Length: 120
Image (cartoon, rainbow, N blue to C red):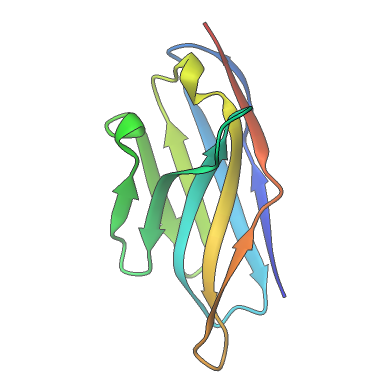
């Protein structure tokens, strides 16, 4: 089993910054991809940013140039630096990891979510 623990959410004003942190632990052979998703009230969960084992990143158009994802393969951790926050960034942010087990199969895991609220 794999556990993802997130931290770093909170309440900020528009234009300010936050950094989210996620650590994966448990039965991990290696991690293929880690990422952040978000879900605002009444909306579907959407990908915010992801980073693969090789360090390649992917961002939603809405956050490009404002958010930066980074990770540490050795520690199974991922950060999301969020700058120039807007009210529309308000959501619950979820960490996600696509994890290889010892047989070479991958399974997806989710964190419990951390609330980010941006006041305008």
